[in-house]
Length: 261
Image (cartoon, rainbow, N blue to C red):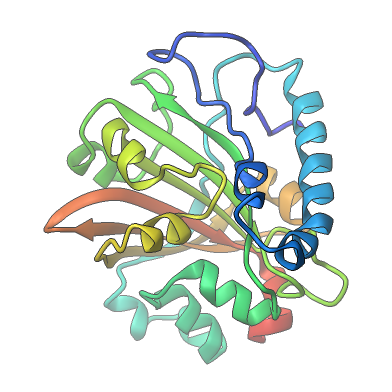
């Protein structure tokens, strides 16, 4: 797809280049049982196919990333007001729980999709300077994340969360913003989910949901295969009394197959 601009093979310096995301699965296979490795074989093929498609799509793109796929909001509320405001009250209780929960999104998706784990596709991870940040990103990025800032964008897929036979349909698009040093500390395995990285390091976290919104984005309509509007939220991850990242998540309406209308 034309929106993907990551995983370039251009050789650049560490100070200025987006990180080239590589799978660490081969390195881990030597330490796993043959049965566990066999379970991953099908996903290895899927991941390789997606990477080839991404490389082809990015070959004609510039080295600068496109802006993240944030919504043009038509409705916005704080997490406290969201408990009592329309149109959130028109959603099913499971949709409201998903939008307002402070639990792990990847764990929730795996449970909804009856999947062994949530699959992560990294669209982009790299430094973001002031020129690239001209879009309307969450204000907490400016006030809470120290420069240099790294932006990470992913798609999350989990079994049949978006319907039977829809394993390759992204359930969630997520963008996050990190201080570069914090990203290296808390996200050493760039190919894995945020929750997997943080859990492996036994990081104690508090998720503070700041805003829930509903809006539109044409690029996401192509990614999700669904017409807008979409529901989204953004929140702060705190650890040790300090913010470590700002996360923005957009949910595919196809999750209605698991969550109801």
